[in-house]
Length: 62
Image 1 (spheres, rainbow, N blue to C red):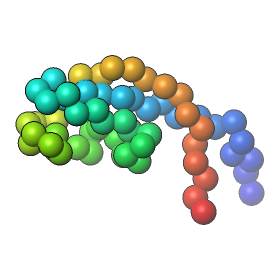
Image 2 (cartoon, one colour; image 1 turned 90 degrees about the horizontal axis):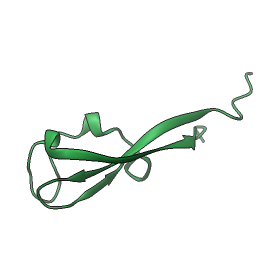
Image 3 (cartoon, rainbow, N blue to C red; image 1 turned 180 degrees about the vertical axis):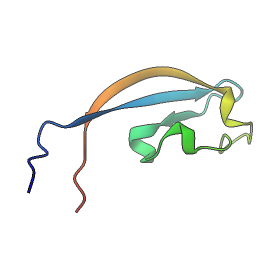
Image 4 (cartoon, rainbow, N blue to C red; image 1 turned 90 degrees about the vertical axis):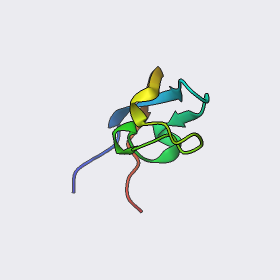
């Protein structure tokens, strides 16, 4: 069994440049790369702009 304490990953917070929708990879539990379109306005995912990146701990499966 390996010790996973201290492992981190980088996640981003993105904003749709059309409607202002905020996509937070940490809260959504998935990468922006998995998004095909903006949920509210249906514009393609390439309209999202990176606002910030943050480092978060890796969650262990329950």
